[in-house]
Image 1: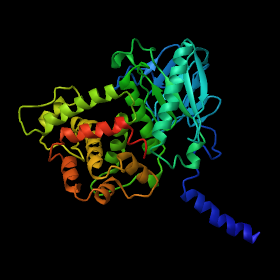
Image 2 (image 1 turned 30 degrees about the vertical axis):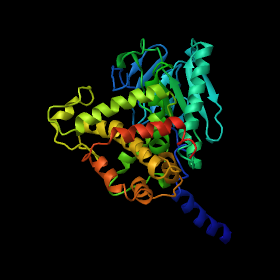
Image 3 (image 1 turned 135 degrees about the vertical axis):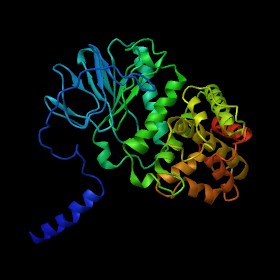
Image 4 (image 1 turned 90 degrees about the vertical axis):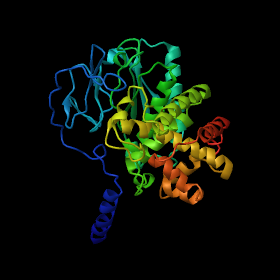
Length: 387
């Protein structure tokens, strides 16, 4: 008996310290339910974050368990009892009316956890096949950036993909899309299946699934001059470009990003972006770099414009200085826990270029278009996929 106590005294603290005990893995008492709030419309930057009709109900994230409406099913919940559902803290609360929906487990090799897709029963067979290919292909591409995969305790719950295309209208504007806030148990396809921007956003969301929603501590470096939040956006925004294989679209997208970057870094006090998400940046004092100023427009610019352009330009430099190395290879080493961070990787592999890269990051120097274009050529040649 003494040996058993000694073993338990060693094993229990070890398991807790490794983070293997989660809410879903423990036997928890019955949930204490609160009522669902009254529905009020709410639109976010990508679509409706609140929705209520005969098929689907979506509400903002709630910190405690909520009642499951009679005849409805929770999607993306952490825990479900007969009458209650508890959802992840920052993820939307979602209920579907089962008679309108079909679900399927999508088989994806090597990722090590289950992915479940929910789509309306009225969806055509061809669109269902296209959705399922999109889901499987995107998970494969994004998971390759994170070679360690998920921790064992993170694999216990499936990840639900909710397809909301067409429910709120024609999907051409934010007002006619439904975009539940994603989280560890939920992502959505909310753009038309042929939309390249929709592909981007799904890639971005799945990158955050790995590096933010179900992260591993050893794959999330913290560096003095590159805060964790900025690193996570570096990876997700670059992945949009690197993993979208419609090369013509990616070229067009990069041209747009370059225009905005040039307008903010050309030292001309009269040239400012007119794009809606960036136009208020003209009221701030530059330079605009990383980390960003505490302002929505500055954050928008650094996360979604400057960060991916920097990594594309670095691939352009690598094409000249170290053609056997790529941004993908650097990120994979970080996500294997074998590199202390992105800045450290730059300094180690590109010591003569490091000061230049830091000036790009700080917004002190404009990124040359020729290097960005050279990085694009590397993406299209498949150099990053061979890493």
